[in-house]
Length: 163
View (cartoon, rainbow, N blue to C red):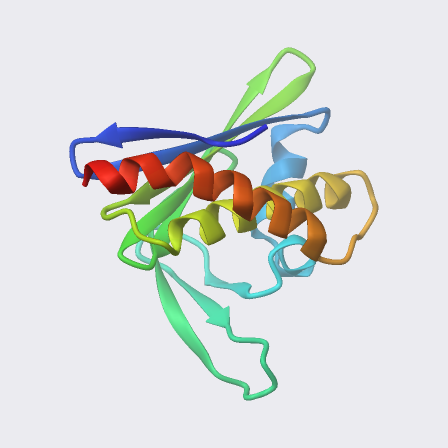
């Protein structure tokens, strides 16, 4: 299921919704504990998990280069928002009956040709997160990402034409 992309006051918001048969605490753990986080988003590393804390984005290209990302907002087992380029990404968790609902929201100030790559990447990362939550690990599915990238280009292109 593709993310929804909506116009907002300051740019756009892409929203992914996923439901997991895991508790909020289990999903939070997979989102924020480095040993689990790096199984579904290997570039991210939590350094100091709290509002105004720090994360690292590791290039993972053999150079050892990384850069810091600011954590903008955080409440354990509820939400986590951090810088992402010129915008930000926010994970929101909520218990719902016997499952957890996860909303991943990317706040995008300006649409450009990179946005479909990001959205395809987040979608694949959510698939990988699902596997982590079910005790499995999967390699990055490049073919799946490529197909999603093409779909997101179709979704974003008309909005680029409007801008």
